[in-house]
Length: 60
Image (cartoon, rainbow, N blue to C red; front, side, top):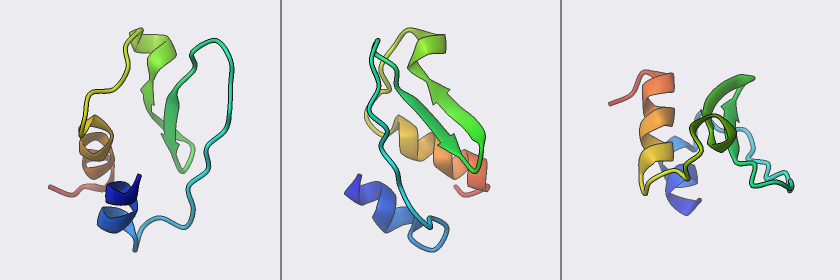
């Protein structure tokens, strides 16, 4: 989480964690779904969230 906030501080207004049941793990940015454990059936790999967010924001 700290790496996410450090790398994207100018673009992130807030981060919200919403507890859920059934193993749900989804990442959305401004209403766009970037990752869904429900759809993939897998947990994200280390660094995968940052990679997806960079791609979404057009960063390398």
